[in-house]
Length: 169
Length: 75
Image 1 (spheres, rainbow over the protein chains, first blue to last red):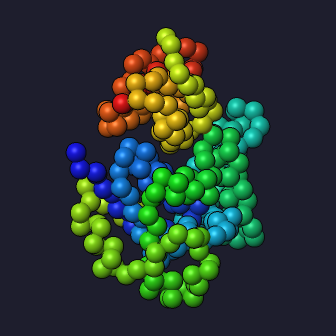
Image 2 (spheres, rainbow over the protein chains, first blue to last red):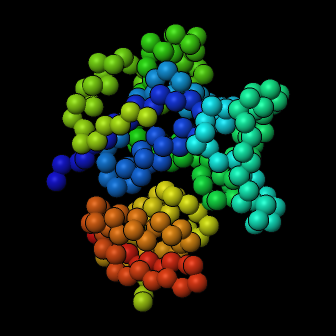
Image 3 (cartoon, each protein chain N blue to C red):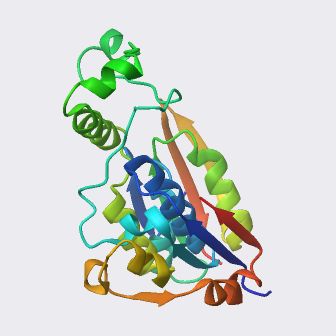
């Protein structure tokens, strides 16, 4: 049986959107897929050496429940429906939301981004970075983790054209 | 049921139980049995799908008090 292949284009650079590419890539690798992730535009944030700066923003995101990760069950169940206009005025609102989400992630036994990323690398998931956006955003190759390939769209298609699954995230 | 290795994946959430199982299976020989404990309700369907796609055999699935026990035989 031929090895199945999956390619992912990772374009988002927030803590919440960091999960789908790494979860799908590590799981596919565990199922025996050969996997490549092409990080471009804001997705480059996901392959920086330090990912502790990844944040989640409830601002302009009506789909995000705002629940507290601590306290009694009835308290955790409350959805704090705070209007965007107020969120945008409170300094540090994003930082608070990010630390609450990190707490929720730990409480639920969900892996951290840096752990999932390491699991991907251990499973031979190949990471490609878009050289054009590296330059566009003023990054240096030393900003990123080891083992990256810096390529253009044509290199991505060389692999993507042969895949069974190709996702844009 | 007899088993050769045990994996405690309790408290872990998707996709960690699958990733740990894959790693543990790499440490046993073909035909040996891995016992997996999990508390993730999603893992019931996930281990069945994992077995189907990887060719490892899911010998049994059981649930008791919110805990799931799987026995998987390595291909």
